[in-house]
Length: 294
Image (cartoon, rainbow, N blue to C red; front, side, top):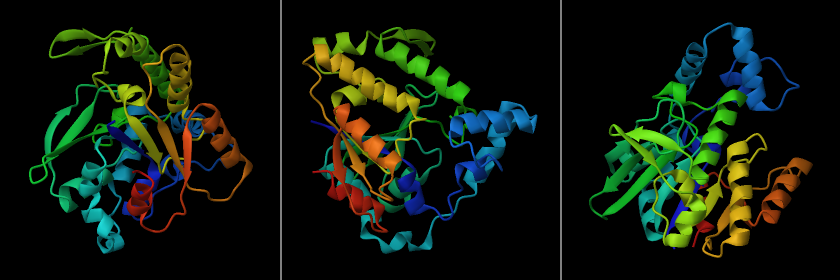
């Protein structure tokens, strides 16, 4: 079965110098509110700026990120594309806003940009960029599910946008999502009906949660990530009554402090049918992650 990789901030931290924290991104001095979508709403209100201005300011901070000098020391950087190809990974989902993954593919692995869908202006249901390596024939799509700094209004930050994004994900899964593409109105049946009819065509990154072996790495799975948690619970509900869903989801768990929150997240994922693989992280994030994917 085809595989998919979902990469979080762990990838960015392995590529870029001095990744700003959430509180640094939104210039917050509040220390006792740890739910970042809510903290964003508070700071947006305090700033007295329009949301567009506020997001633009945040995107400019991210655009200033610099590639680490030591990136070139890891063989896994130049081998990243080959690793993806050999494992049958043709889609990467990421919650990162910047272009760290694309940088590695374009500058270190011989890929070129070969296609895209950038028609969405705020939410990211079907927007992607495709890359192709002519020497290997490998084609891969990157789906920035939480937005792109080059289109800063898509950056998903506040609880308001998380909530509205979740409603669109729900509509897509339930067959109620409509959108305009090439001047035509597009709507797909529910995922449950589509998997009964045969292999699931990938029209959105959401489909990959139901049709491919999904590996999640470098992503903290904080409970504020309501879109991902909802998809996992919805998949479990559909799977209960639909034997056609037979893919697996694996969380590559990097144990840090062994605290109660980490244990809660790990147990919650297990009970939702997610497989857990534990990795001892080194400085080579890509190598560590790929060791966990057969």
